Amino acid sequence: MRPRARRPLTVPALLAGAVAVLAGLLSGCGTAGDLRSAGPTPTATGPVRLWPDLPPVTAPPYDYGEIDTVAIPGVQAS
Image 1 (cartoon, rainbow, N blue to C red):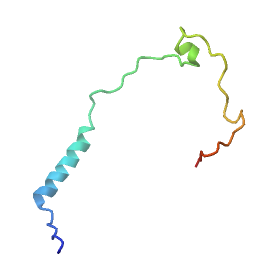
Image 2: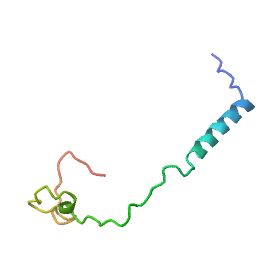
Image 3: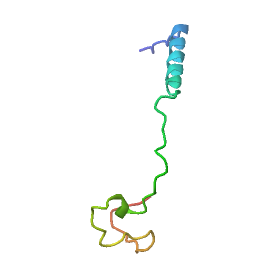
Image 4: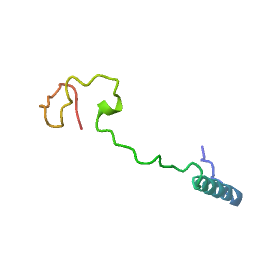
């Protein structure tokens, strides 16, 4: 079986593709929906300030390297 001959792209098809790409690029440019500042706000330093209604944690989380690592058979890390 002989493979089909590929048709070359025509000028209108190339022009339509270029217009579609250009329209997509230009649609991202504009000033609608700009971010506006609400003014200076304090930075939360922990969950206590984020969720004041919740009780505090019973044990703080471990820092990286604070606990020993354990090899688990059948689990591979890359």
